[in-house]
Length: 440
Image 1 (cartoon, rainbow, N blue to C red):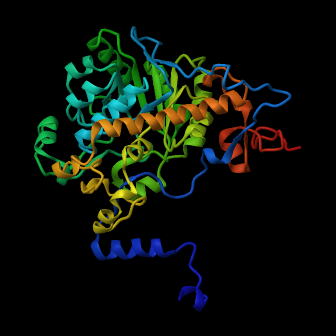
Image 2 (cartoon, rainbow, N blue to C red; image 1 turned 90 degrees about the vertical axis):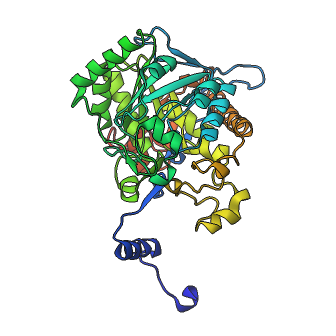
């Protein structure tokens, strides 16, 4: 009908925008959802690798090795992490995810020799029991914070920000607060829980340095201390984190996901992952700390090409959250009819906060949670991580690298001026880096 009448949709007031205005006018409530930014943003797809041919020699995949191991946290910690692959699992809370989902993440990560992360709300027995290497998140909320669990963890991640909502706190809706979660968080059952946007016991980097030393004392200086920041003022934040004594920086771009926050936050706060990485690397290089303080990049990592590009730009490792959920079975077509029943569809489901996930991943409903078999979910995640690693190795070999960490900006070009400027690599077919050199 629209095509027959020759109607033209407004770019500024498209049907989605009109729907949001009408929903806000009808309810007086801002929209909350999970997932990450859905608008188009400059991303890794806008970069290409320069494979070897004559001026560079590739490695033979069947005969020549390309290593993927990574050491994280050897600046001050006596027991740094030694991972087999440079792809880790990001922090996602028990509360946002079911206990079965947390167990599956631990199983999948352990099967391929990498780490997983607790998220807000504390450590569960399922996750610790199935995670060979577990990072304990220390968040502003302090929900579930237990000094004994700090000691049981293999590393500690102090969360100062998240890519989907830098400057904002987390949300866990009351319908997901079960008896167990309420007990772990020492808060009422069935009542919305909103995490603070900043830590209650410090106001700046000098106070953070004191907190880091306190955590080191609690854990006998064994555990690496990560600092996680949401990508915004990345250059300065990284410098301050290093000055405060961090072993590892976790940089989360605005394509990073979240269990629940305001949609206006997700779509309009922060900067793209692609733009943030070079700023972080520059800050580390200026302090002579690049590769000494490791950089983990998260926010929109989907495949081995993304892994390789992040590492070529200077990351030591990457972290995945949304992709890991999808690997477990989130948004799977097998639940299509039940997604329709709750007003969504496979591939579009993002109402993690409502706790009605048919796949049993982002829910606390006992019946729904049982739909996710932790062993099967762990195998699916392990398969996905192996494929990502193999893809990244394939690209590294094509660029003549015997270790994936040997990838470098010189191996990359950009498809458009915008991405070339953000990533600080040449526009394809030229040696021009916008803002850095004159075009030919």
